[in-house]
Image 1 (tube, rainbow over the protein chains, first blue to last red):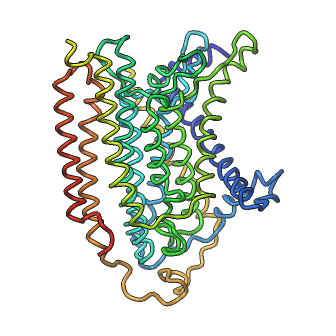
Image 2 (cartoon, each protein chain N blue to C red; image 1 turned 45 degrees about the horizontal axis):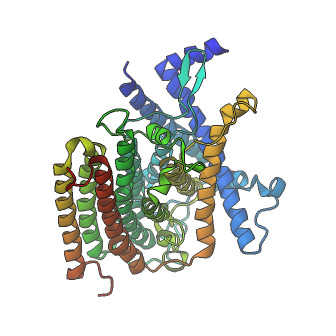
Image 3 (cartoon, one colour; image 1 turned 180 degrees about the horizontal axis):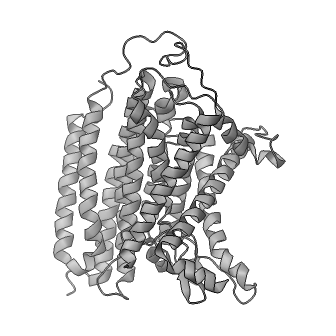
Length: 371
Length: 122
């Protein structure tokens, strides 16, 4: 068994394939669960039961819905630009899968002589990769809105694009202090070279201060986290920023003309994005997979699995916040949305960046007048 | 093969696998689902009425301004990230430089706000 695992992970292509299958399986299971959890939670908050029929407590409802959508006729509008129209759902889904690839979901495992990182890959430009991939999602929406050849999708697509690029700017700026802080923390070990690698950022959050408070970055970078979370909700087009698919004004927004399985792909991409953004927030601000594993007390295989459990638990806590927001807050008006983005979040993230940089520089080099 | 290329091979394999999976699912759906288009069904959606006019319409020029502003801030992010990684090596000079850069950007944003291009009411 050990020799087999070693041989598989020594081969680059096989290792990639194994990781790919594992990540796909994880993502699909998580999304199926997430849709069910959301429906149950929102139902609970609205004093309803939610799905109850398919499986115990309706767990299998998402599977049943997926199967139904697979078998539904796909109506293609006459005026659609076929090529782009067909490509858009796929373009929405692929970046959503790709983002998750750089997120470390657990401690590196050593089998025999080979160390297997529980991460698709550890890119040294991890943070930039995240931003790049989340930018790609915008294209799918532009193309879907434009190629449908219909009024509502076009309006929804244009709105969605403006919203997403506005909040992406704020999100990118909110992540700069994280990189700065991680690089500052690393300063002692590797002199003067910083890091953008997500696995390193997680490892830098190890330890605790004041005895019991974990060394998560959120305790230093709370403003960054708040800006990131607001931008993340807008980026995932979730309530209260779900103007993209505001039923009351735009019908279905950019996916009005999509039906059957193509609609299912957009739906899947939306939930994947929500999960990805929560996972990114956990990785950057809440210590990723870090958590107590009690290796002396528990059997070996349980404490080996615990980091993954911690990671998923933290992610689902943030997902709960997403769902909670949806059940609680009314939708914003479009001008309010854009004002919040450009007149509040972006100046706030710039101001926080300047403040944080000055404090970090002060701590690294001392006050300018003391030298 | 270096670790560097190995990482990007994983990206490529993953993207290819994702496209393949989606194509298989779409293909399976195409084989299984009924296909019965009628002229009324494939008309553009317009809340049940016959669609009026073309599918495409003009959109407000404001969206274009947001696009321009976004471009500036996104390019700025490209400058800021490498700066953030190596700030402690670059020293105080880089700090002052970036402060000037951010001040210019904030000035530009303030100008756009004062000009009223970000205001939504006409």
